[in-house]
Length: 75
Image 1 (cartoon, rainbow, N blue to C red):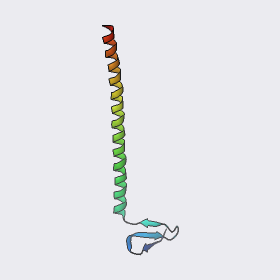
Image 2 (cartoon, rainbow, N blue to C red):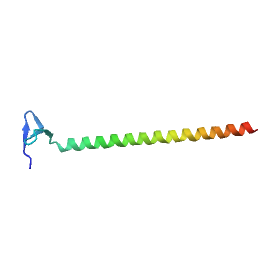
Image 3 (cartoon, rainbow, N blue to C red):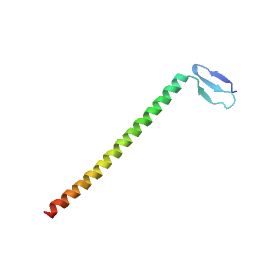
Image 4 (cartoon, rainbow, N blue to C red):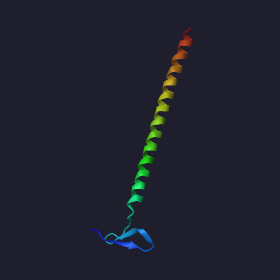
């Protein structure tokens, strides 16, 4: 098991004695960061999906326009 030493003047930080890394020991802050990250990813995915839907609608509208032009040209 890894031992941690408290970092002076930072109550939520500790130094890993094996690797020398500084780690955040505040689990609430960690969980909040993970939640923010998940929400940002979900937001990006939602935007990407909306853009895809809009592009599909554009293609369909273009097809409809071409069909209408063909109908007008036949008359």
